[in-house]
Image (cartoon, rainbow, N blue to C red):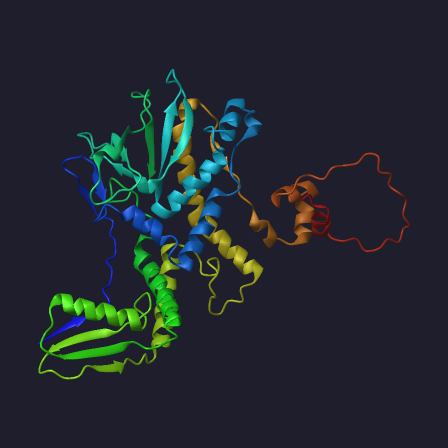
Amino acid sequence: MYKFRAVSLGTTEKPSYSVDKQKEYVRYGVNNLYPQYLLDLSVKSALHTAILDRKYKMVAGNGLTYDESLGVNPKLDKFLKNPNPYETMNELLWKIVNDLEIFGGYYLQVIWNKKGTAIAELYHMPYEKIRAAKMNDKGQIDKYFYNEEWKKYVRWNDVDEYPAFNTEKQKNKVQIFRAAKYKAGSPYYSIPSYIGATLDVETLAEISNFHNNNLKNSFNPGLLVMFRGPEPTEEEMDTIVTSIKTKYAGSNSAGEPMIFFLDTEQQEPTIEQLQASDLDKLFEQLSETSKENVTTAHSIPRIVAGLATEGSLGGSKEIIEAGLIFHNNYIEPEQIFLLKTLNTLLATNKYPELEILNNNPSIVLYSEALLEKTLTQDEIRSLFGYEPLEINEDVVVEEVDEVEEEKPGLLSKIFKNKKN
């Protein structure tokens, strides 16, 4: 008979739901901490973090605006400048987009004016700190609960209750507006787009962690330690294991000893080194598979994610084309969802519909000659995000000889004269 001690592996969170019968709120995840798991996951893997960052920037674009050709709206201009006393609408937008890409949805705190005729202020509500109430008999979530830190056991005195956004009642209270895409089997909480690759993100993080701890251990291989003799008590085994791990192992599993206690006649303990044969090839294959799964789950082309693609030269035109595909297939639908929810929320104020300003990288795919024939100089500058050129009427144009030097192309002029 023998007993074994080694590294204990953690468990992966799952997006499960259960109703707390006493408090009438819906727990999110096995330990009610699934949003926190997704938040922690967002900074665990370099690839996952980089893709999320690219999504944030592309979905947010150059900020919010509206079609001023239909008329300037001073009230909306004021609201965009300060949806609350502490930030601009674009600063609020950045927080919303972060939550949307990490969690698949977002929450806003809505404050009505005293008359209840218009929304006076909007505030961001961190997604991981909100839990939904059990649905009412009409299948609607009519209230939400906020807590700074949800744990297995929560003091209910620390939990704040808010009514759900409603244009007909409870306007004298702070309301919570929820934006989430419908997902079958998930009526209470949103699901992120990359849900199918959370294990792959963890795998990439653990591979980096393993190599880092191998480095801390000077790449020493793991140890196999065998104790033969009368079986020690649990406390004695724990003491032995702690002592050996402290002396021989790093802060994590790389190079950590595997310890066996064999219930036999008393003999001297034996220590053997574990050989890490072909581990580098195994990790390389595992890493590539995980990267492929992560990029697929994020719906992002490898070249846009910064990964090399076999048979691809990685030229600027190829990158731009892949970026346009990603924009059309993922970013634009995200922006449509975001704008639809924001415009639905602000429809009460009778504002013009909001839009997101986007750069137009597709213009680079066209030749300079074609641009010169179809667009004016200021139109091209506008596509690249530059202001129109100022015309100095006092400048005197000197006469030139019939034979002129070859003139630079239009784009050369534009970039030479661009305003910083």
